[in-house]
Length: 237
Image (cartoon, rainbow, N blue to C red):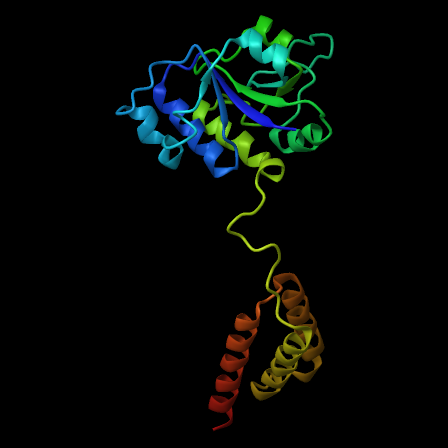
């Protein structure tokens, strides 16, 4: 499956640039533009695009809405939805967090579509697409800026599009013997500060639970052990 992004009839060049940048952030490169504004290389679209000005934006394809419908499994994003299943133009819909799991099972190429800044997609356009995606937002003001909406959706699709990120795959948790040593040092600290004997088991249990939730790194454990050791030395002097 390949994944394209389409911007339909955008009015503001800067929004096109922002979407191109979000694509670059989250491992996408195939940008389709339907009735785009003029994208001046010296204007705001390229100014907002960051590094996407070098490849994604200049290589964008200008296409028709009908061509996207014919060539792709299409997903249109909209802020306004119907909660009545009888009104099926905008219903059912998925959230961005649910969309990645849905698309993982799609065999054909996919195009995620973003509509106009002021009015989004028409009902006729929404009736032609395969899926609807909507971002959960405050009922009092659910409409997002076009660039913001695209960034949220593309972020949620990162599991399908990004092979690796700058983040490690797992927490660098300290070895269990080191954590056990820190736990034992806390017990010695309770004794050194004269914490009441009958309250020590509860304090020890709370500390153990805290360590269990925190998953401290090796450096954090070493630092804490050093602090406890110095505090205990100060107390005993």
